[in-house]
Length: 102
Image 1: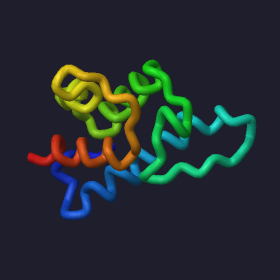
Image 2 (image 1 turned 120 degrees about the vertical axis):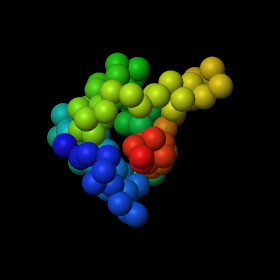
Image 3 (image 1 turned 135 degrees about the vertical axis):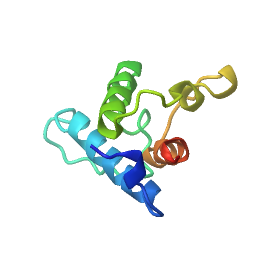
Image 4 (image 1 turned 45 degrees about the vertical axis):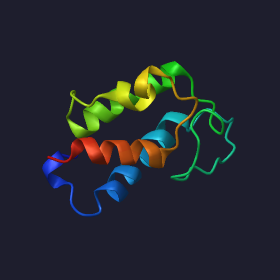
């Protein structure tokens, strides 16, 4: 578990690495043994086929990993009340970086 006070100057890189590992674990059996490259720029819906339930599972994993239940994920998934169609690992990492500091 990563505590917010452990996040330093390269916190977005650490968050991105953590998210990449979480996404890899979630999707390891989705592609019938085919190796799928997952990078910080991978789009979760378009490239991996994430569904709304997969995002819920990822949010729960993130909350557990960072021991935080107060992250306003609505601001990520529906900024200004409009749902986003897709997100990359980097976009989520950037969002988390801004909300885990402090």
